[in-house]
Image (cartoon, rainbow, N blue to C red; front, top):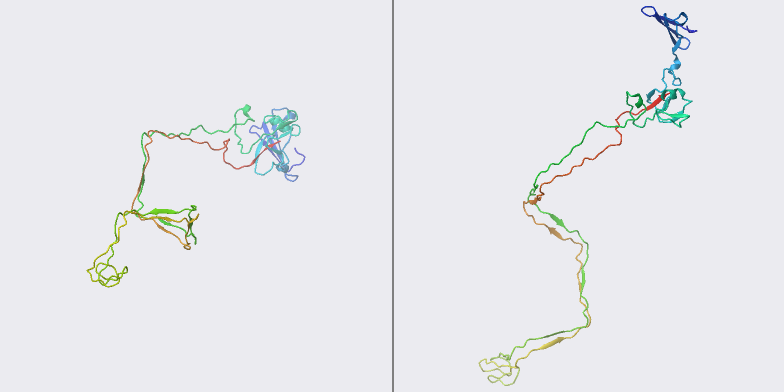
Length: 326
């Protein structure tokens, strides 16, 4: 019986050959003990030693009570709690963590081979899976998905063409305008041609005469005789007879224009002020535009299904840290 206790219970078996004793101390730290009895054992061995089952200190993270070395737990905090190590694959001392080393050995790495060993390495997003094979413990199973395939095909459609129709747009016109260019002028000039002249001539007109009309009451500037059929300054008393000039025979008149020296002719265009030019496109009425696609003959179209995703098959989930007790 513990040195101090508040209450005790004795629980015999149905045939009273075995029993269980419990003791509790509610005043000295809330401690709880248990021991068992077996009547078939020697008298001095029938009762087993008292075992402390629980104290308030069992709930302290600093103790290892009720924990198994090598037990992996998930923890919702950001750092491994006391009594545990983060499962990050680190190499730790075989002496300092002797109980943990005895539990897992070098399953997750031999460290330096003599003084250290490795903790399990739970990589980011790693999922723990169960195995029935002891030899598989500590191994890593690559992610995979259920076997499946993506199929795609493009069957030959035979010789065919595609019809294209452009619907009529109704009666319409297209507007256009020229933006104002500001007040401006356009200059032009002719190249200098050097000193030169221009020659020419009239065609000959054959032997001919020129008639001079006159009649009564007509003044004659070519003479003083006023008689009939003669030119003169006096009044004529004839009946409008016509004199003639003498013929000069076949002849032509040649001419030459003097050269003006090397020169050019300048041309200028006055500005017309800021202005625009109106442009209009006449309405053509309701119409459509025809189009056709040429016959391509029997053919197929290749289809490619691209891959996507990462290198590991990871499920969606809430992230926490994995810790191992020592």
